[in-house]
View 1 (cartoon, helix red, strand yellow):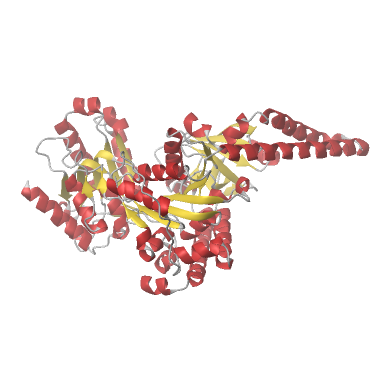
View 2: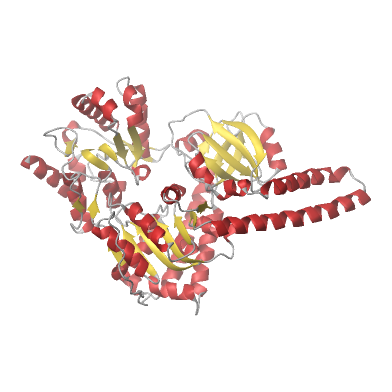
Length: 633
């Protein structure tokens, strides 16, 4: 199927993408409708799409003149939630008989922390509706806007003729060959050979370059250097990623290098450093903002008095309002132009690159970080604004999140970066030296996913916590008669006995290292499972344990997705699946396992049922590899 798709013309590929995206759109829309109508509040809370009950805090107008209200949850803080910047939400109240009634407006998440959010609401009527109820909840709503933007982008690319976008279409997914500039190589003594080559390839590329960064190879370091060096040749670039967290990460690294960044959209990590380079904060800090704020306040107050005035007085107010609004628009344009003029890097998510403040803006170069996690349609949103594109990521790690299985099978899960890697291999630079893992941890994923091209840097090659310790262990639960269960309320799998055994093994290992040493050296631990239900159970077990209390800040329990981009000294993985049919579900996606395994710096412990998992060649070979290296030692 992949080969047949690659033979299609660029426009036919895009038409297929649009059709698959339509499938995903319809599926997700229907799922949200079902959740809204059928599922109870408790189940929605456990799925991370609902907070109930809410505490409603202060309301205010933000720098962009939007009415914002603060809300917080004070129950069930163990449950991860899926609220993030830009997501649409609906407020609701619940009657005594359990019936849910939604308030008749849609709002948008502005900030989201673990237990607190700032929500943008349509206006004073919406605020009055919120304040009229003692108890409220909030639920994620179907994100129509993101889909609308992606469909618009695909249509623009399909219709592009005789312009730069048409050229990029043919170069990225068609048969047109990318061009290169002949430049004298730049030396970067602080980078390794493969990183230095990647930066130079970016500088030489006229239309497209790919920085393929396997785990621990310094992809972000390389990308920051490529952006920094590009800014010696270009006045301003656009830097995007699929998620707000990924945008924050690269933006923060650029700020550390002294690059003036303008962040469109709000950061996922709300702290002063992150906030200082957001569009909203810089807008507020502009010298003209105080005048604009005063005008906006006057407009709101005058508009509020209109009803009580006579016809003549209303006409005077309307004239005055017209002049004030004209002046407000002038000031907004002035501030906007100066903010963009002073920035060298504009940073946003791919969808937010379509934000109204970006209208009409064009960039010579676009950098897309974590490009292997982005839907192709999302990439085209930003590519429309640029002359060339640099992808950075690793298509052997986490794929885009796709809910419709048929759309994924049809090719929606195949990213634009992956297509470029397949079709234009000369544009790809592989980073080959990793600085994270002990060599024994690295070797298996290096062979399976990267053709054995990865090398461990000398400083990490033999790193370990204990003398004569084995870097990887597989704890086989096949003879323990553990069984997985299906949890309907979270639609996930759980293996309670395996979770309990994992914490027993973790406690044993902590005692072996020595609690005092762990606290003194701040040795950190990660517990990973592909299943949210297992994660929640592990968290509840750890919360009840007095032994783990001193180490809680050093232990992170999360899903594979939650660990993307992170690393820990010690990683424990709970694979969960234990059944007689050899059904392994999520574990079939080997890219997730690549992420899980490669989070570990010095010690990796995997718990799994060999009789269930060995039917799959990857897990069989992994078990054989672990037996082999432990046998040698």
